[in-house]
Length: 369
Image 1 (cartoon, rainbow, N blue to C red):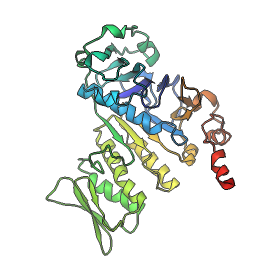
Image 2 (cartoon, rainbow, N blue to C red):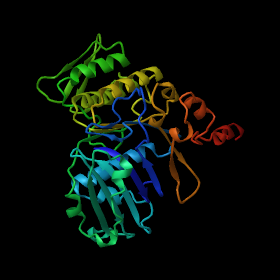
Image 3 (spheres, rainbow, N blue to C red):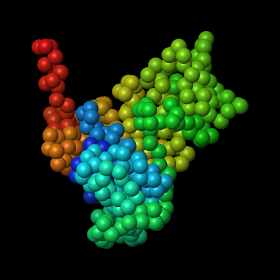
Image 4 (cartoon, rainbow, N blue to C red):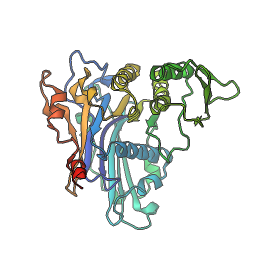
């Protein structure tokens, strides 16, 4: 599954929000291999999206919105969507365009009526699909979709059955919504990847051993003690592992899953907040290298050192929160501002060209209290 466009209105903190993942022309000598569909070379898409922005700008919320929409498509259950409506006195809606594994571009439009107690009849969904042609880019293919009167669509389950579901993966920072503390890959090489990842983050670690009696249990060995990772839960009563090392468990899961090709869509949300900048850059390079054909990764971060990496400018997008109640959060693309290869992305960010830097006036006012 490759996400090409998303619109959100009255969901989470998004109002009239739109984000697009196509780009206009092939980049010669790009450091990201094959940013186009394998069988349709004119159909270009952003394979890697590095998403930045101030605190509470919507990076995590965007990932959770995408996850909830994907789950809605797969499970046909609307509860996860409707409970995220910002104002139930107003209609809510979303629209996503994505490429399935079958060579089709899909468009899912959804409208949720304003209601205090939302029922099945309040959910209106339209699903369209277009076979991607050899000469199509995203814009040409999407132009064949028709405008639909969603009010006439009353059987959303039947509509969603038109979609061939695909594999996707989301890794967020720890939250109460997760059933397990950590997701663990079932890849054959997971133990090796976990060991290598944790050793990179904590040189004191000697080895990682799989518990033979369990599919999801590993022992993290130090010189004179060990820590158990059991069925997605870390048994670390003495709090031995550092915050960065704990984050490494999730990072290893992403790497193993991407190397195995199990997931075509990955949303990696601030998994490196406690990890050194240079280490984060190295891991991002590895993640990109592990990506298969026709796959996509969102990578959110606050680390401005990422801007120095040799990545195409269209890779970078910035979320910014405004004061306009009609929009609230919008997306800014670096490639729309910086047209020349010689223009410095880091300088643009530091000079707040994208108006995405946080305001610190309130912070400084604390000194005067």
